[in-house]
Image 1 (tube, one colour):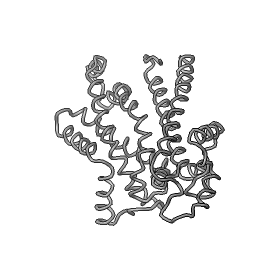
Image 2 (cartoon, helix red, strand yellow; image 1 turned 90 degrees about the vertical axis):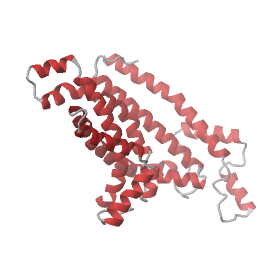
Image 3 (cartoon, one colour; image 1 turned 135 degrees about the vertical axis):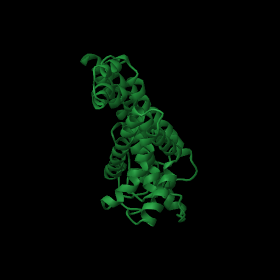
Image 4 (cartoon, helix red, strand yellow; image 1 turned 30 degrees about the horizontal axis):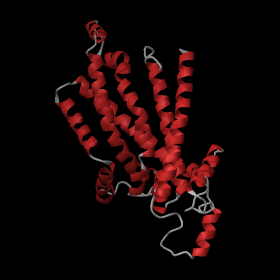
Length: 309
């Protein structure tokens, strides 16, 4: 098992290298072919000064020469300087802003799990009753309601209406509640439905019926016999979900004015900050690949019968 697991991790890491190369290449040419540039802002710059700036950053060279030069820096771990935030490297901006996005994602994940798992378990134990229809109906509403709609609605109700929480900023725990809830509710809906489906499938198995016939209590059936197998689809979902909670916070950070990496990425796209866009995309790509790998390993540990291929 240990050898198989090590081989699986090595294969996945080797597979990730061409994926990252393709992502870096596509992102490089897409941002360079987009209209405008990092120095073509509203304020008019004299042509001589703009030419000197472009020469300093190598923009006067042919595109393929710029690409080779950038990839060479990338192989050395250099993401380059930010063109919008003068004096800052892209790596420094990521190090400063990502902890905010990570904190938002972790709290949103806790909300998603804290609401989704109990709702799915209760719905499965009370199939085709009000205890099933109500949480599953709410879950369907949560799936259909995008975060850019949920966020303003929560601000309107809990901030403007009741005055309980702050509508923007990142200075106290009150600022953390609404953005975390906005992200967490969306994923809680998926987790609830996946948990219900997994529980219903496991509860129909012969060993569960045998345990019930022997007089096992409902709590023992759920937490000892059924939950481990029922969580398999949830664990599969958690890989992209965790990546989505962290990287999908672009809109949330913009709505709530949170100084996270997502907001830096949005500003970089508007300002044609080439290196910031490419560096952020690559960082999130590595994060998604790592999270999916972790989920695959956890699945293998929870289900020893599964084969790592």
